[in-house]
Amino acid sequence: MLPGAARDTNRPRLQRAPEVQKFRRFRSSQVSNRIERDSPGNDVERDHSPSGSGFAGAGSVDMRLLTHNLLSSHVRGVGPRGFPLRLQATEVRINPVEFNPDFIVRMIPKVEWAALLEAADHLHLIQVPKEPIQGYEHNEEFLRKMHHVLLEVEVLEGTLQCPESGRVFPISRGIPNMLLSDEETET
Image (cartoon, one colour):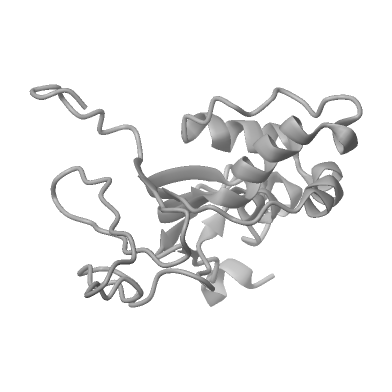
C-alpha cells in the first residue's frame, strides 16, 4: 500500500503464510501482513494475538473454500434454498498446502461451481476459471489453480449468511458455527 493511500475497508485482510509450517498470525488495529518465520529465539508455534486460537500451524482447522462449498443452512423450512451460503470474510490467510493432484481431480466434480465463483469473487481471487476446463484431469496448471483456491485460501474471521432465511453464522478462528437454536429446528 502506498503511503497516504486509504485502505479499502470492503476487502478482507489477506495474510500469506511462509513456506514453512510454523508461522505466527498477527492482528492489530493497523493493517499488517507481517508473519514471522521460524528463527532462533522465536516462539513461532504459539499465537500470542489477543484473539488468536493459541496455536497456529500444522493441524489448524481453518475454513477453506472447499468447506464453504459443501456447507448449507439447515434452518427449518429452508430446504435446498439454504445453499450457497453468502461468505463475508474479514480476515483471510493463504496457507501453503502440499499439492495432491489426485485429490483435486476427485473433488472437481463435487464442487458447486457457481458457489465457488461467488466466494472467490468476494475474496477477489482472479485465478478462478469460469468453469472446469475439458480434460482438467491432465492439466497440471488448472489443478494447481484449483488446489490453491480450494485448499490454500483460509477464512479465519467472517460470517456465512443463509440466502433464504437471512440467518447469519459466524466464522471465528477459522471455524464456522452452524449450530441452530431449538426454535430454528422444531417442525
